Image (cartoon, rainbow, N blue to C red; front, side, top):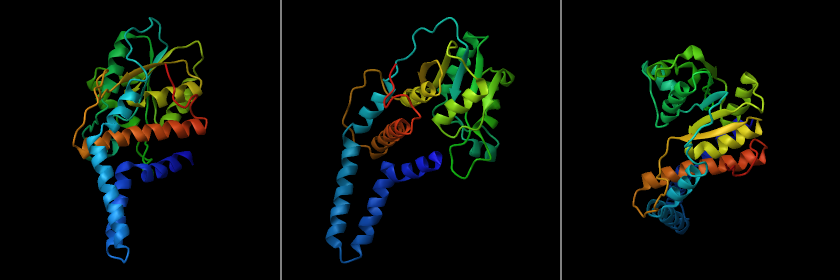
Length: 263
């Protein structure tokens, strides 16, 4: 139930959808006797769009998330295993086109491969199902093998968890598969902006986890700049709000050990 509620909530909370809904409302009102209301809604929408385009609101929120867990400069010599979270491959287009379709988070797998060579005895886990409502027949973990082989990995060495639909399930379902103990140390690889929620979920599930953030989009000392791009401003804002809402509801539902997990 939580999975479906979260998807429905995000549909209405997504800034892009909110702007579209506001524009539709303004257009409808313009053809009624509520012309003044239409002008108010339209003007408010335009002002918000300009502010999002010009002010570095999204940049600030995004860089704050990315900098929460620092980059790992030195890893311990003994690691039990390495877990990489899905969100790298679009399994549906991949299956349709019969060609690997990768999104912008491929650093999750390139670092996964690099660390697997650094820790040749470590257990390797890929956790990724399908986070799309109504499309649960095809899982990301089921189509990822060719990409792993390209990166020099042997899929037979990797344990695949293919039922997780969100971050909380990445943590709990992988735990059922692995049955880790607190004296074991596991590296968790995911995008830097997503790391606070991932670490909170894995800690809550009982993992002794080491954060290994990748897939950066901002500089470590990000200088906030004014701009004029609705696409980039809205993109950063949307991703950030998605994570902040996720953190809030994970905390309220007991799926994370802190509202804003820290190192």
